[in-house]
Amino acid sequence: MSQLRAVINLDVPGPTVSRHLYGHFAEHLGACIYGGIWVGEDSAIPNVRGIRTDIVEALREIAIPNLRWPGGCFADEYHWRDGVGPRADRPSMVNTHWGNVVEDNSFGTHEFMDLCEQLGTEPYISGNVGSGTVREMAEWVEYLTRGGEAPMSSLRRENGRPDPWRVKYWGIGNETWGCGGNMRGDYFADLARQYSTYCRNHDGNVLYKIASGARSDDYAWTQSLMQTLGDYGCGCNPKHYFDAVSFHFYTTMTDRKTGRATDFSTDEYLESLANAWRVETMIKRHSNVMDVYDPEGRIGLVLDEWGTWWAVEPGTNPRFLYQQNALRDALIAGLHFDAFHRNAGRLVMANIAQTVNVLQAMLLTSDDVLIKTPTYHVFEMNKDHHDAARLDVHLLDATPTAHHDDATVPLVTTTATAKDGRALISLTNLDPEADHTVAYDLRGGSPSDVSARILRADSPQAHNTREAPDAVAPVGYDGATLSENTLTVTIPAHSFITVGFETGRTHPSESEDQR
Ligand code: AHR
Image (cartoon, rainbow, N blue to C red; front, side):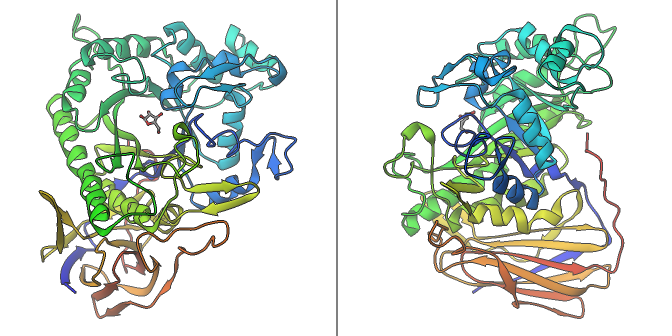
């Protein structure tokens, strides 16, 4: 067991940790939409206008701030006009990327916006660049957001929605280096300017445009985008074509086919952690590239796909990306959130892939039963970080580490925030074997009223099933004690803890979006 000392200055609030770092992603892929979120109005499973009620309730509990849709790779073959109007009249298509299944377009724009309204979340729509047209994207924006008399607003009205919606987050393409068109960076950068030009702000709706970004550590892609941001043509009317650039990073085993979600050795566990830790380096290095072109930090970095990607569960369609979710996934989520908190500011949004039944899901469905995964519980336990002010955690001792091949794997990570006079510390112990202790010296306040919760199980492989839905679920924890201004927390091997307390100070926190 290591004993670590840390200092937190309760009177020095840092940047706001945007709630959008806790964003989500739902694609027309496997059983995420169909059979997951969307069961249809005639289903025996309780639903509101076809949207599964227990899913809405569970996601409301974790206050999801935004939901990205319809893809992913699917977004670049999605034609929105096929998904509006009477369902019986909607044409079908083949979802060529995800299993060649026939998509009947019964879940379209109106259904998605209804879902967002039921969830109380902001839509993040990913527009089609790969196989769509500028006109098609421009008209989708108009259909969604324009009021009054205009061709697209009239069509929307005919389809049952008189008032325009408010849509802020707008993606220009997805993985345009791959499934979104196999483009080169400079070519897409120009296309992003072109598409962006025609995605207008209608009737006071202001779009926040996110250009499809890099794969993992492709910093040259970010450079291409950043270089083309400004209007260098005449210099007379500087425009900025997008508000953010994205990148995607998944935690995988070196060989995706063999990395199983629940059946892994300690060595494989360490390999996956080593890969997961790469996320923080990538955030920093993409940010460094952005700093060169945007020293004022006006353009946001958006990690709009992240999460674990294991081999699919035996017997399931390999293109449906259905995987179990173990305590290891929860610990990897804890690691990511700490990296997000430490880089809040330039990093403005992150979206886990994906919300239901796909990859690192929050929720798994089994007929009429809904299973909350260990990852779901980390989102819930970390909820009070949303829009709170970061409190930097200064570790005075080196964290314990493990090694996998050439990689050094830090085994303890912790961050803190404060909001409305109450602080929340998150603490992840990735160590497969040893407990550790962190003693936080809480300066500049009068801490009191400590309460802690823990997510743990006998092994990192533990997971929730239909038969044992609460095998991994948070419980109260008495391993956090306050003595004067020192908060001492013992964190058992492979566990995630949150500790809340009154700071004795009032911290300002921005409730509005960061940018
Ligand atoms: O989330 C699954 C897929 O991963 C997405 O469709 C794509 O953008 C990424 O490659």
